[in-house]
Image (tube, rainbow, N blue to C red):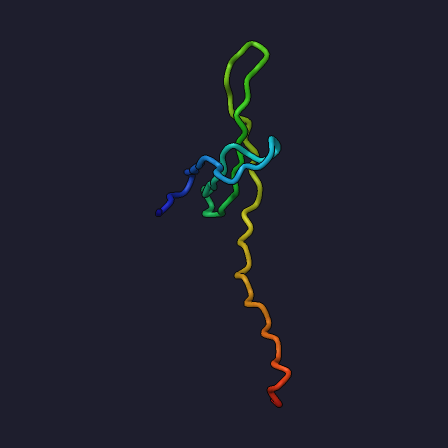
Length: 78
């Protein structure tokens, strides 16, 4: 999905395991082209109004997983 500057997207968090995990996650591209991570929690005010609380943090790419080192075979001389 191509994302334009000054836009953001939020998706429902299917991996939420506790109340502290966000209900939605996504990202935002600012006017300089910098990518930010978004996290949002659904809340209800004391008066019953529903709202989203949103946190923005620097986007960090996950390093590619490294393959597990292979164990040497005890019968292999090399």
